[in-house]
Image (cartoon, rainbow, N blue to C red; front, side, top):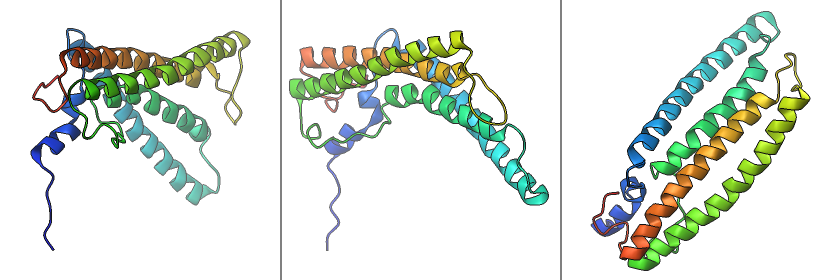
Length: 193
């Protein structure tokens, strides 16, 4: 059996660089998001070390280290929400391209706009609801359950910041897709962002 390789144009469609927004704001915004992703990477390393030490301590002494569970919860939220905008901005998110894989020109740009609008709707709602929840948790002095009583405003703050970062990122993606639609340029037509 002969192994078929994808044509170069199909490979270019999958290129993250082709989906990365361009413009004056892209470089500083991308730098900010990359810095937050780097901090999230350090958080992931700290989380792994913390859990490994806790498991070893549990094995040796039969009880957990106080606070590891609570800090793990907060770190997971922080890692997820401080990184998600970078993943979207750099075009490395999971894409189901059943409709957009063969689209060219204005249709490809229109599908990109539709994708950005759907993401804006979702993260706009998440931003709104997390802002309300954060405000209530902050002013109500709500505490999480567990051995350590950590304010719930802390993890909700990471959700709020992450949703705000996503909204701004999706606005940049929408503007980028809008320019492509107006010019009729498909992501694989050689424009690098």
